[in-house]
Length: 127
Image 1: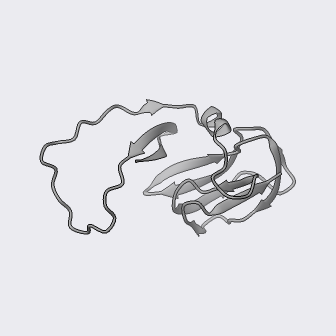
Image 2: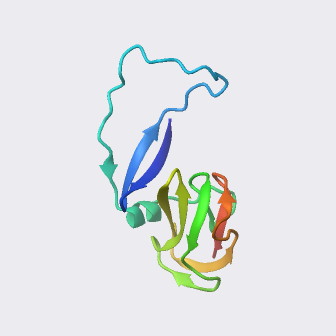
């Protein structure tokens, strides 16, 4: 299972996605329809503030998914609060906002608008 955040019409939804055997390339129909639970809306800044970066270096803000950078909302040297929006990604015609995991100063921006990024790639370095 993998936890992902999906944003639809400006509302963020935390969802659990089941990763099936990645080596199995033949789609198999389900024996019966899966029961779908309604997604719970979460407040993106508070949720982002409670999450630690998943990269090796403290202060690195990784991409939560593979996609294209739509906008960079901060500049190097800018001080930000925990939960401040750093940038916007687009994947499958949906925007995902990347928030600061903690208060700090933006040291380096490692992506540019229009650039394709992969999941886990460091986008912003903070101190």
